[in-house]
Image (cartoon, rainbow, N blue to C red; front, side, top):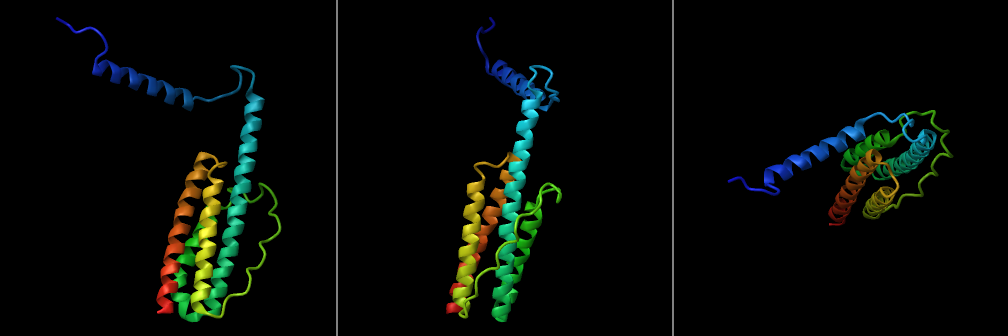
Amino acid sequence: MRRTGTTRRGALTATGALALGAVLTGCGGDDGAADGGGSARSGGRADAVREGNSLRRKAARDGAQLLARYDLVAEAHPAAAAGLAPLRAAVAAHGKALAPPHADDAPDETPPPAPGPVSADLEAAVRELAAAERGRADAHTEALLTAEPELARLLASVAAAAAAHAYLLTELAEETAA
């Protein structure tokens, strides 16, 4: 006698069919002819691209300012330059990754202000760098709320790296104090 009702195999097949339908619907081209809302959608997409480029420019500008701070600390404290070099290189790579895809999307606003003076004490200078990295991690985490998914993943990755940098810099500051 055959069992009636929903079986596990039937439920899995139905779920798979629904998922496949959702994927195919999401992958299809949208020319806006179905409901006449194409221009509204393209306008929304253009706004999202502008917002994403704005977030990218701000993140790149903040990264450039942080790079300048790394350079100032390395210049003021040559003994720490070797320890800071890998972190500085990562910040530079993040800046390249966060830069808008097309340089001509919008003119860059004013260049970032020069970072303030560096502390003469190595421990304090490294702690200031750690605080700047924590601020960068917080800013990228906050930007996740308004970013498109692709940019949000990038920002999350850079925020995690900045948090790791802050931790490493804090450890470096403690080692220099000892």
